[in-house]
Length: 111
Image (cartoon, rainbow, N blue to C red; front, side, top):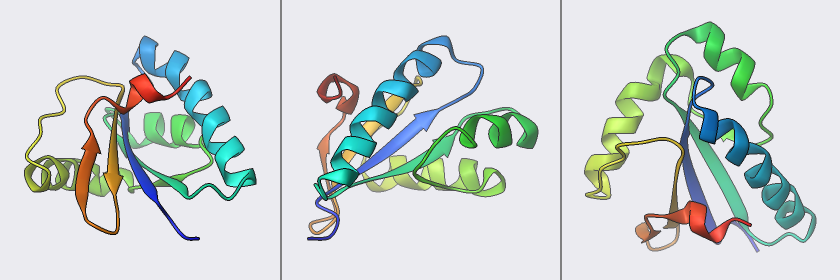
């Protein structure tokens, strides 16, 4: 068992498309958790304040980088995986065993 796929989810409370996509992602996440399907998600906020982060992240069932560390971790992930995350929502899919980026456009796999 264990984590087979790690989704790194970049999102923000002020983003309209994020507010549409997050419930879809949540449904898929909860379904895969029930089936013990090996999906874990790490949320990285692009919110503008701790209050925005607290309110939005409070609706999410997965792991999240603390707001105060989000910018630093955001940059480190982009550097490590040699990718640019220009817009939200973005879902990177990672193979945690190999430490490699599987899919840059992970949103397309969530439906």
